[in-house]
Amino acid sequence: MTTRRTWTCLLSVLGVLGVLLPSAHVQAQTAQTAQAGASGRSRIEYRLDSRVRWSDQLGGGAVSSASGGAQVELSPGFLWSSTRPGLRGSVDYGLTLQSRTAGNEPQQLRHALNSALQLELVDQHAYLDLAGTVSRQPVSALGTLSGSAVSDVNHAQTSSWRLSPVVRGLLPHRISLEARHAWNLQQSDAGNRPDSLGQTSSLALSQPLASGASWSLTGAEQVSSYQGAAIKARLTSLQGQMNWPWGAQWAGNLRVGSETSNQQRAGQGAQATYGAGLVWRPSERTRFSGNVVERFFGRSHDIAFSHRMARSAFTLTDVRDLSLGTGTETAVLGTLRELFDLQLTPLEADPIARARLVDAELRRRGLSGSTPVAVSYLTSRPTLRRSQTASFLWTTTRQTYAVNWTQSDTRTLSGDARQVGDDLDQGGEIQTTGWQLTFSHRLTPVATLSAGWSAQSSEAPRTGVRSATHTGQLGLSTRFGLRTSGGLQWRQSRSQTLNSATHENELIGNLLHQF
Image (spheres, rainbow, N blue to C red):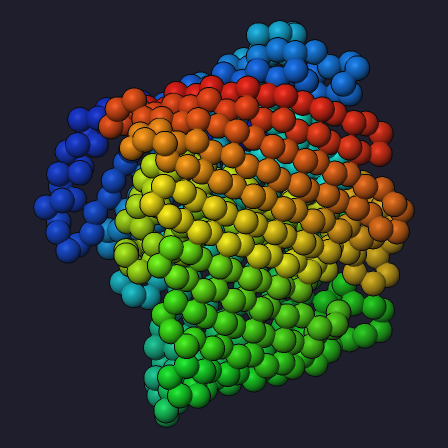
């Protein structure tokens, strides 16, 4: 709890400093970086978002016991980005004050953070990578998944932090060296889910050969512990890989190695690993990659396909792998922002400049780029997961169509029958499926009509426990000026779990100003 309070205090200080920082200093900094020219630039943008939500399920319980009410939210925030030498990355932070007009609940402060930074400590040799995210995550896949900020009690504020020093160098015979150590901490304010702490150490050597071929050798150790659950997982591996190109479009690899883990069956000892991979890139718009490896828990694979056209983008992924300690199982599909990023890549190569271009396009079309398209939940142990995703985005001059699908199967490792209080206590396996359809139509140069439908379901197949949620929404957004926008949205959701059923109507109005 002490660590959690410390992070909360740090986030509060970060929010206050970021929002109240004098604009004169920002303008001076912008002028200085503009003079730097080719040396890079940094930029900061402030925002203030006010939001009023009304829900007929403010209590979050069953329909017969819930009552209607409103919630007022005030969210100052900022987005800082830098491409300067020695410091690259971005920090997007928001602090939300929530107050309800009914009931006796006190005001709440919630943090939202999405950040990734790289500091160059020694020119081209030593770096420090930092990353942090804070968001609300579903606690249980088998609970209510309405997604409403007002009524859904099956959510907890979850933070994930990563600190990783990296050293790179060049040895004789053009052999490259990279040494890395990473600390990963995941915390949640859910009382029935433990925090997780992970450390990963790795050392990698690689060398280019004739005709574009190369080899690499990587040794790594990963340790993950779940605080309060008496679970500590360890994995040590050594892997060699040979890569070679086949003409201009194809590339392949073969890999062989060994690994050992305390999550293996008793008496297994070190296990040999071997596999192969293939990359096909017929054009700048199309890419396929696939890797298959035999490991101590069975076969793992990582398959991805993407194709980009002038007005559309399509992605497909299929991944089966071991998760030792992230604390969250997610069938990762991505967001609308990522689909737009894929489509706009040919227009802007710089990722930070492209991010601003994507945000501007999303605002112009009245869409929320941060809308999650995944079924996620908190776990308390190592897991074996397979996730499959597909997404399609099509844009015209005035319309946007997006279709997203995700499916995942998460299970405990063989022989793990521990009862630790998470969803996997329900027979050791959770299956999830999600669909999302999104449509927007630009009525005028400043006004956009949007609609969406989503369906999510989760099931523990060995016990029959199941939950399902269907959500429909309709919204109208407009710009009142160059930096001011607002909108009105209606949302209806139906959720069914083993012990309850909810039917919620929600009306949301917001006003956003960017300074």
